[in-house]
Amino acid sequence: MKKVNKGAEPPKLERYRGLSPSGTWTKCARKAKRRVEIQQFIKNDQGGLCAYCEINLKDTDGERKADFRVEHFHPKSDDSTDHNWHLDWQNLLGCCHGGSEPGVVNASDRHSSPDHSCDVPKGSENWDDVVLNPLHIPHSPILFAFNRTDGAISIDNDNCDQAGVDKIKAQATIDKLRLDSQRLRTLRKPTLEQVNDSIKALLEGGVTIEDARNKLAKGLLKKNNQGQWPRFFSAIRDYLGEAAEQQLIAIGYDG
Image (tube, one colour):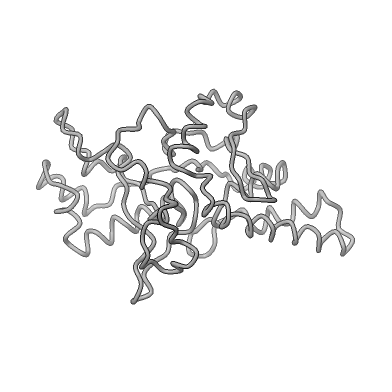
């Protein structure tokens, strides 16, 4: 999980909420142009990554389902107050299907029932005080560490302390959202292996380890022409260490 910054609210969402302040997300999303605009704004804010596991969100290929859906961090079903969580722009995130949909693009990698993750285990539970909200975590330092040999994720205790982030809540984020599921380990591992192989190739060409890491950080840790971060951004960031942090400072990264 990385920091997510919410940009301007989609005009069509704002307009719908003004006309239907008690409207539901289902009714809001029925109009295709409104739904597509909201989805695109979410994808842009998140740099094309799932707000929880950081896999790249995939559009439909015309035959198979997009690996993307709108997630309400706070359950939209909560009617304990007058607040309408359905249409709260700050409550809308973009997520993958967490391995739960057999008909998604690249399903051979992305479907793994019952090995589900992200918002699937959360369902309609209120986990506001249980897991970290990607909108409310610091952009630096990185809160999680990754193991290249098996793709595992763990909390970075020192960085959590430095950032003043509750380590119990950080660990619960991994556990409750199942970010260390075998499916996600399997998907993250090749990304880390590829970075490692690139470092080896540069070293064999006579480049120093420091220069190799700097070169890769500059090449990888940036948005592409479509405004997308590389998938498993935080895993790459953690592996490249100080070189990654310097690159992110250089590009003004804030989430």
